[in-house]
Length: 484
Ligand code: GLN
Image (cartoon, rainbow, N blue to C red; front, side):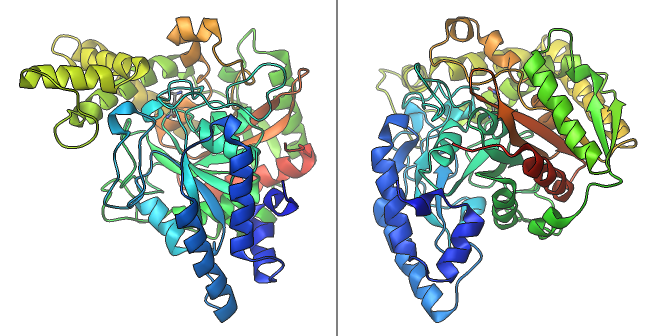
């Protein structure tokens, strides 16, 4: 691995500007890492030709002085973002031959800023999962694995593994219930799920539309700030996108935490919380306290209903969103004697087990007779969870919690695979944020006794990603976490 592929995005931009190396050299170095890193299975599709062309264009712009904000930065794109003329699979058999004729808004923003696309990154099928094991293209291996291969977390597992193993300078992710933050935590890197409406969902394969948000996964807090600035912004093509100015997120890194109040929700410290997790949580709070922040215990009383609420609403929306994959219009088609046969065969063969499970749960909770008992109740609970946060933010500026109760676990872990509920339980600290539409960032805090990374989560007020960057930068400085 050449040294230049260990640089952060900020460092790389500086070096490119100073002509220490060219964008083509840099892209070739990453393509080389990708070739040597295929054992991680991080990429579903590599696009070297596209990348080299974009890098040549970047070099021209550096020479004639028209270089843009991300000129020549080699990125990996989660394979849930539609990329024009580049295959986009959502890690599903049902889309494994789909080449979109259009570009998602978020990736268009990145291209407009001069980014180079190295390829499309692996994920859980349709982003449904927490370990990247539901991908049709096989599991991703966490670069922190030692004797046994470990999961990178999910669903943006390819994105997190690729960033941690330097198979791209940074990556895009999406987060419906934790899919940016959990893999970032498991792979010892940083990711942010912005406020719902901050990034356009146009051209992102939909999972649960009222929860889905795009965001960056990168080596550090500054890189996330740089990337989010490019990805975010109002888009007429997404009716839920918000027309609110996108600030210069990097400028928040220089602010102080003195005088800020940091809330620690007592419900996130149940009896039996892993003592290592609790200790790191306290440590993070101490770092902020030493810098003059106030630490305050807060309450989010409906936390215990969050998982149940999420696992009713997310499948309900998924079952509706995935109705479009019928084998008629695009994607994989299985033969059938009659139209019904064709539908049934296509959807049975085209979707994996976890996706079929969600479609069935979702259809069930939306069906006559069960709608009131499940879907409607979950919608009401969602409002109460949102209100919890709004009340908490009357007393604090930011909320600090662990990202996950555990570290990366082995691929094929029986307890998770045999009982999906065990997998769902890992999302206990992340799903409330999506239900409430809030921004949340995960950054690495330290290693377990077994040498695996833990993440800390910061949750912010709506559209206050800036304060998350401010606070996260201080924890990052004090924790001195050593990346892979
Ligand atoms: N693990 C959660 C799920 O399986 C979250 C996934 C996501 O955020 N895309 O639904």
